[in-house]
Length: 635
Image 1: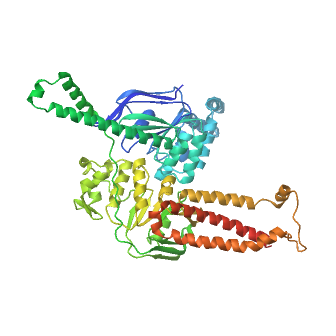
Image 2 (image 1 turned 180 degrees about the vertical axis):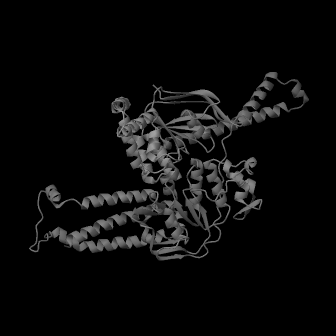
Image 3 (image 1 turned 135 degrees about the vertical axis):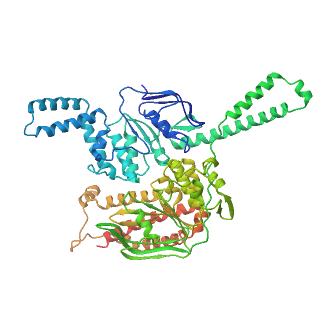
């Protein structure tokens, strides 16, 4: 039996139909990703499926008695509740029974309590809770609180936006749902939490409908893609990669069909406008057909245009952008940066990764000279012009009109050598002319991000700092932004939990290793993750106890009189060759470093740059193995 059926659904805001007689069915065990452009109506549809939003027409049927969880983009909570109370409150009838059970338990301790009556009530409540498997719900609440790094006694009103999103996920998962409806579940989660959520959803038996623009998450989790495009829902079996291949062909076929239709309509329009003689003898049926063609053309909904992104890097900065030597920074007892050194040059595209609270923004401010270190030195380069994208959008005045955000006091913006009217420039970011005077507070999350990008790109900058720029942007805009940043000749600092975005944009990564320790790596997120995997495998292999090694070979090593093992002829020869092998690798490493420091490499040969970065990681691993072997033999 299906878990959910949407039938003949229609929904419109103003004159634009978000749903146009749409149909959808969710079967048990399916994991369906709902995708579409910003403003296409995805969140409105999900609210309707959850029973928290009304349709203009059509029906939503959910399997009677099904347990389901819904996580909206902006979860509403009572600010006076504790985290644990908020999670239990999401358990429906079970929550009130648990609350009464705990209240009766406390009343039993009162000196004048009517113990017999209270005990009877307690037994009744216990039976009710056991029949609903409530104790497992309560235990599950504790587990998800721990997994999402939440303090159970913290007041909801004191939580940040990201913590509230984690709380909403914890609340939805605590009821062991049979169906989950998730709106942008990865927003504000760090990479560790995103990967845990992926594994949990893939391993779960619950059916799932989710909205996300995280392509790695889509590929890992989705078993079917549903695209909301111009009011209609189109289904694509498989993951996001399979969808992309089919969608490209569909758009091509649609463009061909529309071109044929428009050509035929144009021919008929020429015919109807012929001279008087032709009009006397014209076929009345052909006239009626032309009128129908006109109606069809007027009713056709074109795909929303693409964002037009352009970025002026301005004057070149000096070759050195920043140099940090043994920098330390702490706040109270918490060490945020410990002994960090790096040298950043013009054209570097640097990604910062680490869990929430690790200090990525603090490290960025240290690099840019906005924050003084407790010790160590920071040297900044010359002719630096910084543009900053703030993940919290604090640069946006809620009451300001869009035109004033982009170009206060002027009707024009200058991008490179091109002068453009501000309304036309807003149109490049898909803001209609009639919305140019609208206040910022009227925009959705995705529209605010587009506006902030428009503001950022309206000014020349040779150092670009993007702090979580991908939240709420649709996939097409993300891909255009990636391409723009790949071609950007200036220096880029990117903080993001979007793994695909990091891999496609950055050439080197600074990662938090815990305890205020940060290390720099060549390549993007996947290069760093692969290095961590290999390092763990090497660490595990070097920890193999000697007795296990003896058991595996069937013999025990010979020892010298001084207690050290005697080397065989083969091992003696291996030891003699090790210095030469290490020197060769170190020489190769120097040559690769020289080539990777050349910004032109990433523009002319990006694939070669990726290949060299991978080889750098391989050399690091090989050197580690050789040096450990050298130490083992030279005892």
